Length: 602
Ligand SMILES: Cc1cc2nc3c(=O)[nH]c(=O)nc-3n(C[C@H](O)[C@H](O)[C@H](O)COP(=O)(O)OP(=O)(O)OC[C@H]3O[C@@H](n4cnc5c(N)ncnc54)[C@H](O)[C@@H]3O)c2cc1C
Image (cartoon, rainbow, N blue to C red):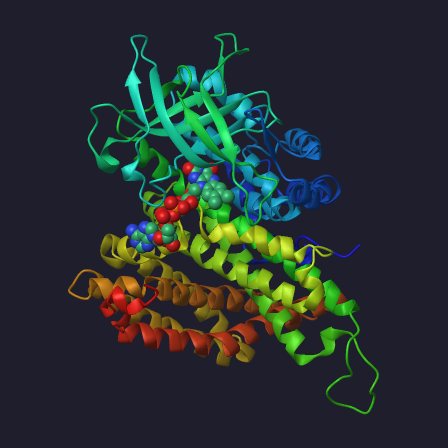
């Protein structure tokens, strides 16, 4: 069977050759995760994804979720798949084993996610919320909250949600109006309406534990007055049994472009009776607690996008090898050939390949930083890892999701007219992946985070740590004769990016602030492009060394493919990035100066 989720050899390359993730097993925190165990886990998750989850992909899209009589039902096949995820321990892979987690390295998990999410993003989106909801309770919750909810969330017996968005506040949560009043017994009564809540209701689990942002009556306005509450769908009795229904109910689900298998719910709190919740952590600290979880959540969205892109690429590749259409452009033979032989199709495939590979490496790198931070005993080293995570997170979310949409779009193109039909899964992947650029902070917000916060932090120290990391790879690649030309191009791009970053940092804090923000997104793109070039050069350096030692057959094909990816991106895309950077340096003011009326339309 064609590989349809992720290229197995490439996954091994990233895990074991580029990052040597199993080195983590030398540390007590990950001592169980040696190479053999990692390979076993990856083999198991791949089988689970292909055999149990993938068959639910199209069902989820076509059957979708239903809302009737105040209840949401998901396709029945999802329930079975959910139980398989429970059996595999995939609800809290990296979380604390004390509470039912698996304690797995993030780098291993991000690769496993490629298989699972690629098999059905809608299902895994709902399931994935358990990790964030559980982590918040584990880190900030009371002993009582942990005892009542945590194990059932981490094991997948119950699900978790994040109930933040309201009709009048999405990107700016400081404006939310759901309110909370303290009861005599210390609990809170909540009143309000939430929208777009993923998994707000579903029939796969006996209970749903909502984490809800609300403002305690009398609290300050804006983001400083927001608190976080645990609101169970059914109250939980002291002995852990499920009790009475709470009054947080689903009032409808959205009709969406994609992700039909994931119920996106409107929720009413306290509309009919009492919606009782308990405070998590301190009053008015709700948003800062959410922000602490944000890096992880944003990287999960990056992983969702990558998984769709990875799958779309492999479907397109398989199709291109089979679809016969038109004679070759050169040679005497006029017989039609498989479209993979046509230069324009090869361009599309290699574009998809190099982006998918670069993005996979980037996400694994960020996850590995998280693991290294955990095992490091040196506070300065820990700080450096955190700096890198912080600066790379908006790229891992914003850049990766934008490029993943491009990759899925190209996959439809490779299929021609069939790509636009539901006979093949690529049109679904394109519809499903589209949301990743919007939720968990739109990509506009990611770009502002990079430019307005992360770049300036510690006197541009985060950015400089990143540049130093890139320069380490450059120095290694420059020692390899065959890569010296490519390394030179990457070095030029890195130096230009440093100039652009300095100018943007200065502009964003001066009179040109609005113009700078108008170029926040191009700046994120340029940064992402340079990071892709870095990742692909790194991979090429490893491949070149392997080829120099002498490998044959499929192994040689694989490593040569790495050189092709790096060359294609660095020679084909990086010059465009240089152009993008020149345009950023100009900071054209048209987008700021144009009057509302001049936009037309009225
Ligand atoms: C399928 C789906 C699932 C979701 N799941 C959840 C969930 O589980 N829980 C939850 O709480 N929410 C969820 N959401 C909501 C999602 O997080 C929001 O839609 C998102 O944060 C954007 O908010 P908004 O839709 O109000 O758009 P807006 O905030 O109105 O943004 C509209 C546009 O304006 C831009 N914009 C807004 N403010 C600024 C600014 N200050 N500067 C520059 N540009 C700006 C944005 O980038 C965007 O392009 C989900 C949404 C969908 C569609």
